[in-house]
Length: 215
Image (cartoon, rainbow, N blue to C red; front, side):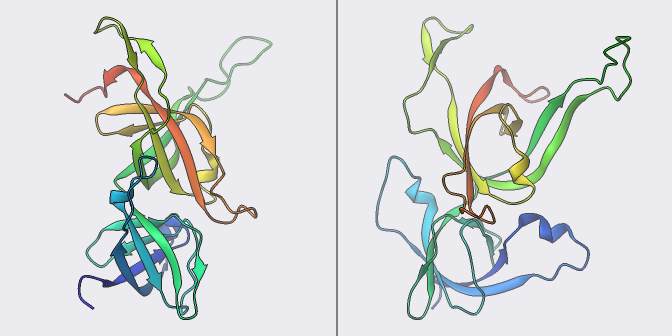
């Protein structure tokens, strides 16, 4: 049926695409709008997703639609008589996660013995779905405005895989014109065997405004 049934490339691990000899796996799936709204979940970006049992899918899989739109399966898979059913959320950014490293210093001499440290990419470009944090915000002073203002908090969802599991508190990423720092990591949506699922992060905008070199 047009506008409902599509061909998708399925990725159990986003970084498999970088391997030499990678052969994409394709499925046909039915994707339809959901009929609920929520202040907690970004329902406008979510869709119902049903596919046959020919290729097993799992929570956290990325699926790339034939028109290039990128989604992540973010609900547990429900096994029906003739299909696997879940929900898909559209990914609205691709980011690198970076970490600041200190120079390696000899504790006896105080001289540098290793590299210069600096910021390094821990998790290279990966799709995420991000939205405004729906909980109660923290408040802080602002140098540009009088009074107290809510910190800019966002929730970020991405695939749990051997690479993304390296993310730690205080790692950073750039979203639009701003840098964000990870302040909370939740494994609540990761499978108990730690082999698939959705990694949930909360991040706060880093002080200083827009990224250097951007307006």
